[in-house]
Amino acid sequence: AVLVAGSANLDFVVRASHVPRPGETVLGRGFVTAPGGKGANQAVACARAGGADTRMLLALGDDAFAQPIEQSLRDAGVRAHVVRSAALPTGTAFICIGDDAENAITVAPGANAALTEADLPPLDGVAWLLLQLETPLDVVAGYARAARAAGAKVALNAAPAQALPAELLAQVDLLIVNEGELAALAGDRGGIAAAAAALDVPCVAVTLGARGCLVRDGAKCHLQPAFAVAALDTTAAGDTFCGVLVAALAGGAALPEALRRACAASALACTRLGAQPSIPTRGEVDAFLRQ
Ligand code: ADP
Image 1 (cartoon, helix red, strand yellow):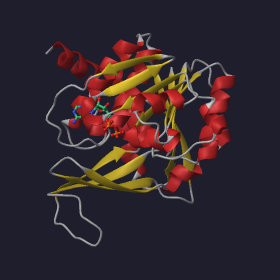
Image 2 (cartoon, protein in one colour):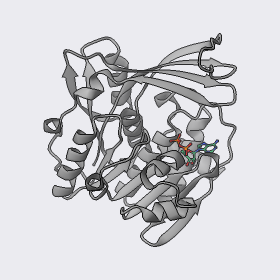
Image 3 (tube, helix red, strand yellow):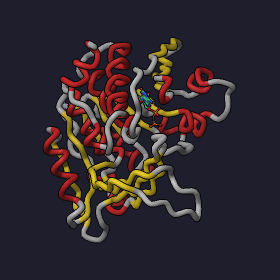
Image 4 (tube, protein in one colour):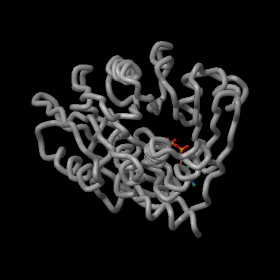
């Protein structure tokens, strides 16, 4: 099984001609709410990818915003371990999407801050633990340590961008970052491959937006070009990539095939609005790859 431990939010999404600049007001259109949060998005992507049972540890408030999040996880087939916070509201995110598919996001973490090390469920049967950085950093590090000790592999999507303690990176088998997150971890090394090589992690996948993905696996580098699509909303593209990549690896796929599926699924996610509603199923990815 894959266990995802991390954030869940209810997203409030509005489209506009462009993302407002500081001090500017724009009239938007097409308001929707949709379940999101990096952790929950990745769990849904992992479950829809098939190949591995998916579980998720998350924290929610005792409020109405929690319900669509739990429903979306259930519908995707994720087994959820929910920590219910009485004091904090369910996490929310306020997302504006411009017609150029750019976005600007403000997150109110709420109950996501309530996860503690003691909440980690038993890890029997868990082959991979998938983590992000939208929950407290010391707790993320504790989960990584516990997973390693239990013999599970650890995948970390180091998003949002920040520097990380060496002892956390030392617990990571697979690091997934975009270019900004890579720069926050490795600094400017005069190139993506050099920056990925500077990190003391066995395998580093760097997502490059419409250019695809570069992976440094040991001493070897591998480029998976992106699939050409008309991008409408890139929200959850990175999360889809992470969930599908880990699902494929947990299901026994070799790295190049896992990367191809992750890039295909994330390209498809770019063609649809919203976080979890945009994440494709295994059948949709298979059909896209046959085109
Ligand atoms: P993040 O959203 O986390 O910054 P990226 O923008 O790098 O991540 O996107 C993650 C993955 O989604 C990329 O590696 C790529 O496979 C896919 N992707 C993103 N944008 C596009 C696009 N415009 N066309 C096709 N695929 C895309």
